[in-house]
Length: 566
Image 1 (cartoon, rainbow, N blue to C red):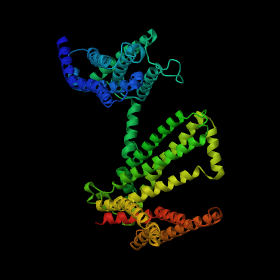
Image 2 (cartoon, rainbow, N blue to C red):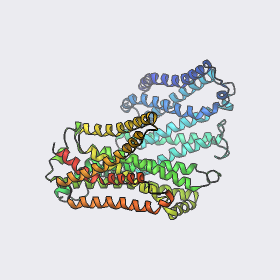
Image 3 (cartoon, rainbow, N blue to C red):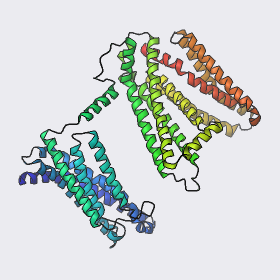
């Protein structure tokens, strides 16, 4: 048995040798080279020497990642060999834990010894660079990590929650060692490990070793099985990803319903989960961090309207990014690899173009609705958490702005309009299924912007006082809105002539566009006394925005028909 472990240890050290050398070299040479460059440049180093502790946490984070990564890479080749050794499971699990702990401790001691020789003075341990406490914590963390790793080979909801709580509590306890007087006081080095802290870490390490050996024995014997609740959760999650739920009885579907479900599973469900859930959670986490760092007691922050504005900006930002992601994922979902043709189950579906367009458009609305709902839910939860954290004054600020004139409703309205305009119009381009059309649309958009900037700058430089420059500026500003409105009108005419949309739908779209423009004009006339007349340029922008909102109802059927009948 000893010879087997000796050979395994040699193999482990051989596999870890290169990675350990690179990790220690990177941790030592990077600050050393930086110091030499600063000395060559004649920069003063007194600030670095007086504030060495400022880099302590950066070193801990990087060294933890480097050294644990080296150990995991070395264990990867030794784990399968250890499982076949003719020894007890407790001995194998203990060897894996101790080998990883020993290597990490050795690398930490070597690195800190080199730091002492190259950078630190005689009082480094007592004043600004604690070693014993972080080293014992790292040993405890490795043992807990082994126990969690082998325990989660038989996953359950209780184990996931328990081990997540243990890891969070560990790091919280570790950070609290640097704040002995409370988190509101100044941070200080963890100079001394008390007897209670030592006993706590050792007790937790022993408990983690015991649990890790027991869990490893179950894994080795093949008795590590997931709980029934976990298996049920996996079935539910797979059903959420694929759209198939085995427990549900099979119900015959019509052609339209079957095609709608197949298209939803193929390209819509992933887009809704990634954009809606993913960006919603990201936005919620960022907003919670903002809430935690917001201090209303400060005079320059004693205004909760700033917090509401931050939520509005984050909602608009993540909402528009989610719209782009949904457009890309859904847009690429109708064509096969290489974009040479529409996917066969869509192109050869026994349905006319009008029915196919309606099915895909309905899935599009469903996907965008769910994605937008994820952003709105994250915004609502952010406001609720802010109200719980800082009091009901947050809701008073929100409601007062709504009552005064819809100040908080306007960002939501702009988010809805921008979300639909970006996602739907991008999808109408992607659903053509032609790469050259993609690149042409991108080139026209960005090339037009660059062309306008260059032309306007040249005109302002060469013909500033000329009437020609004045008229040219008017034409250049009017041309894009007029082209967008004319293109939308032409798309409706062509789609109606090809019977992809009904005449009633075209008339309704025209009436909606005219009503929106007329409503904006009336609103501007009522406020013309404040603005010294009607701002016709702003009215043109509203008309263009209304055209972009209505354009996908005609361009998407045209794009799908063009893609289907190549």
